[in-house]
Length: 112
Length: 113
Image (cartoon, rainbow over all chains, first blue to last red):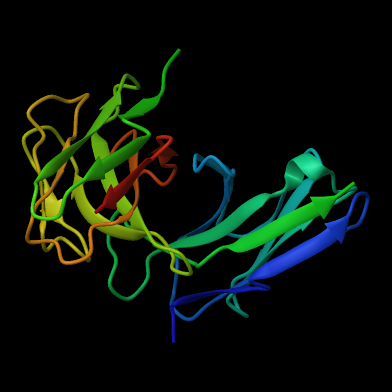
């Protein structure tokens, strides 16, 4: 079992829909990251969370430390949101310092 | 503009040849990382460097080598000992070791024929 599990693996939505991507982890962590990977391959950091909730534009990320679970929400989705969304945690059983453990990613496709 | 550059974007090599992937950053970051991405798998850490002239093996270092002679450069050599080198390679950097946010380069897709 991976230390970081994402669901769903693939998600197709219509423009305007509310989207939720989930991330569960099995180890104690100090921080959780949500990353976005565009079709060209480049990765950008969206959020870093250690507790609570963060919002940036139409993106909202939440984390529940007790339940070892985080969600990424996209409101009013748009075709330009189509990308792979990756969850990564810092502080897994075999990591130290800045080392991150990554989930497999969720491929999101938003159709017009 | 500050950022991380990787070159080339696409690279083709024959089996048995060593190949070096370039990674340069002008962010004045101390820490740099190399990851490998395969379909259906999360990013895996190959090597990392906390500071210039220092580097450490990651989770899948076999068949790879790195150097960190300059702060801004962290090249990765994929040697002929790497059994399955075809993959997407991503370089990243962070301000310092222990600082969470990593900045990623655009990646190099290596295909070994």
